Length: 353
Image 1 (cartoon, rainbow, N blue to C red):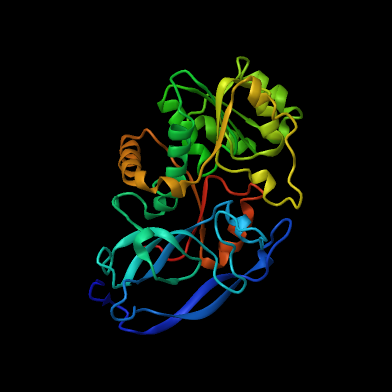
Image 2 (spheres, helix red, strand yellow):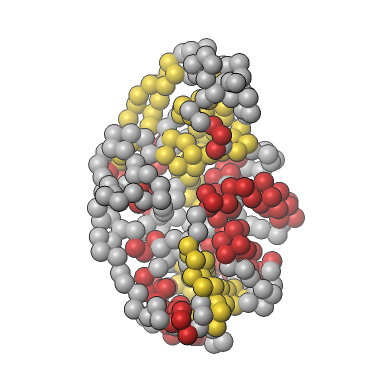
């Protein structure tokens, strides 16, 4: 039974700026594939409804969104965006109207919301409350949200690290990679990260505690680079990139190595994905390569949140964000992920609280 509707909008209709998908994308996306438009939003929910309306404070920019910008003949693991409609992704929000018994007026929550100022949420059950408002709310787009949970389950549940393991992380300064490296150090592993600029390499070593890091753009031979940093081979490769990086890693994996496969950003904008020519390496070395989706681990979220909050309070985890101010900056912020323009977790502040 739905709760009594609570609202501070009193049924009013207000302007609602939104970022829409103008057209489906092939190849490399551009800012022009999106558009900021102004529509309207009602700040109430129908009587008897268990829906809610949220005011969006921060939204996350994530590489997987690129796949949703293409029209697929075969369904993907997440639905395609709809032309002419607002993009959607994880965000931090304030409840301004609710008919749901678990969410009341003024609650701070995070979940899948629109790239817009206000979003009507018909089924709020997938949202989580912000339980640690002592941290910046923006953290719930990243370190205390989807990116943090992704790093945590990918490294610990899929990677199954052991003390002394040799760990390699690609795209290591991004939202997920920076956390995986720090989890590796907390587990007493040796960890090396790759990134696309000298600034990011310095960040990996000075801020996040990686043992070593290198700029992959300066390495003519990735296989040789990995042999230099891992003369005894790699136990865990946290896969964020794919392509030639994966190929070089496979040649350097140790027996019974693990490859938690989080993403392959090097492939997202290619009309014809690159092949990997040495997959036979996983046979002789008995390597386990496993893809995973964070949605499958939502049941562990509260355990993760408490553990991560503890690490943050104790200073055991550092986190770097790259915040674009204003909804009009969202298209450029998203496209910047694919050129490496961001330093740290990319997000957009729509309305700071």
